[in-house]
Structures are given as C-alpha cells and as structure tokens.
Image 1 (cartoon, helix red, strand yellow):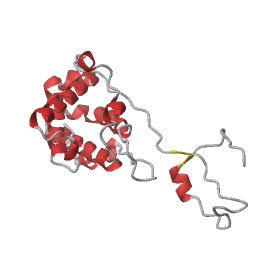
Image 2 (cartoon, one colour; image 1 turned 60 degrees about the vertical axis):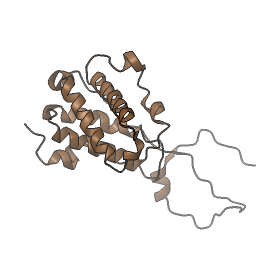
Image 3 (tube, one colour; image 1 turned 180 degrees about the vertical axis):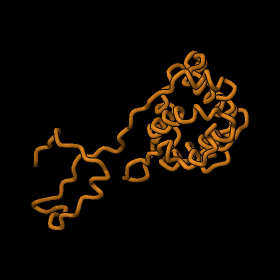
Amino acid sequence: MSKIDFDETLTSFDEVVRRPSTGSRRFGSDDPLRVPAMHDVIYPAVPFPSARIFREAGEAAIRRLVHDQHERLRDSPVGALFPADEQRFRAAVERSEDFFVEMLGGPDVFTSTRGQPALRERHFPVSITEADRLTWLDCLAQAMVESGFPASCHEELWNWVEPLSIRMINRRTTMYAVERLPFADYPRFRKGIHHD
C-alpha cells in the first residue's frame, strides 16, 4: 500500500478538468492513476461596506431595496426556497431587512435580536446552487436600479454582496470555478441607469 502524502499541493477542479489524460495509467493497474487533492471553491475576500451607505440611503431605502429584491425572488426560479405562507415570508424578509440595515451602517437591529449572522450556517437547511446565487444577485441588482436606491451606493454594496454570495453556495453543481460578477461588467449597471 502506498504512503499517503498529506503535504501534497492542492489543485483546483479547473486544473484537473484541463489536465490531459495520461492514457496509459488505469484503475486497477500496477501503476494506478492518482487524482491530486483538490479544493472546491476559493472564497474571495469580502469587503464589508462602510456606514456611508446608511448615511446616504437611510433605513427606509435599505428596507425597500431588500423588500423589492425579495418580491422579485418570490417570482423567480428560486421562489420555492421561500415560505409560501405570507406571514412567514414577511418575517423572512424582515430578518433580511434587519441584516442589511445593520451591515450597511445602521443600528444593531439584527445582532441584538438574532445574534451573530453566521450566514452559511443559517442557510445550510436550504439548498443553494451556483444558479440560485446568480438569480439572487440579479434580483438584487434589478431592485438596486429600480427601487430608487442611491446610485452612489450601488458599487460599494455590490462589491460586498457579490463575493459574500459565493459563500452561500452549499450545493455545487459544476466542477468549474464560481463565476465572478464585477460591478463594472454587470449588465444591469452598465446601462447608465445607475449614474446620477
């Protein structure tokens, strides 16, 4: 039996997929194939937003943004992830509003009642795929543009939620790297609507 090398270099799924087949090595041979250790996702840095967003947008605009996003989510391919019962749906939206208000520089309306966010852990009971993430982000981008949320806050908010949303994926459906969506390249923001 061969010795396990616990110090071997980790390889991304992308590298393994692009690696050419050796052709001569096969399973069960005297020189069996060895697949290198791999990692699934590299989580990018998450730059949390400054209190400037709360000062410029205000609590009402933040709550309206989150509410509008969730109304879009409800009618999207991920709508089934949310409670069908209206009262439970509203409670879920209010929790999200509280989270955004606090994270964007407002009072501690989330942590004072619900503790530390622990977003990944809280979302584990719900299956979230790469496609679900894209839907969530697109509904947020649409709400940012159409809800009257201050355009001066769009980029800073996006630069927080875009990498943060990668951490919410808990069911991978592909071996490829998670798609990054830079603010400057995102179609909803390139239309010029977001500029004052």
